[in-house]
Image (cartoon, rainbow, N blue to C red):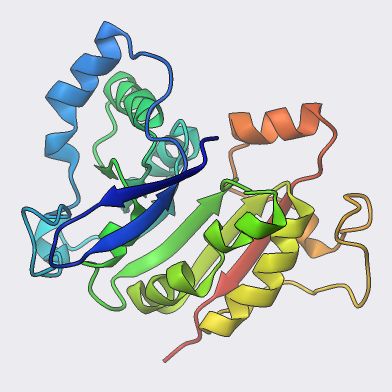
Length: 254
């Protein structure tokens, strides 16, 4: 993973830090075709600052045909997003992913599976949350996010107030926020930070344990959700002896 990257954005907004990779190995011709031919039509709305400098909220009823809308932050290769879209055809799912190789992988899956109920933003989830109307998202997913393992980099993780507060505002009362991770220290930070934004944990936090020991972090967050699809990131974690954790939070009812 690359070091700090500062990307210049629309002058009316100024700078927003982005940390991580936007590009990986050279895309093959098919992947380039997916990006050229399919991506624009799958946009969730006017996300780009050059197109929507006033940050006018998405007309959710028109764009998503009045269906419930879910949000996946950092969909990686897109396998979980496609699985959920196929499992719940009555729902629309917005996926955000700045890593363009992952976006190309998802677009290939969309073509092959002929999935119709997804929208794709090839960039920072914060730009989408900027224009989501309050209370417009029914469920959100954060699956195997970048762990940023060095202590000085923990502020870059998604489970900080910079990300959690706008997510909380976008979620509808009573909606669910799921986090899957194999990084015990990420569990620690989530347990500390997510409730500060207003979310209520739907699991019991053990009274005392060592977050640095995967075998000691146990509880009802060890069991995946009934509709969970184990991703390639999870399979890699399991092969390397790391233990997955599944944290469920809920936004309080109004």
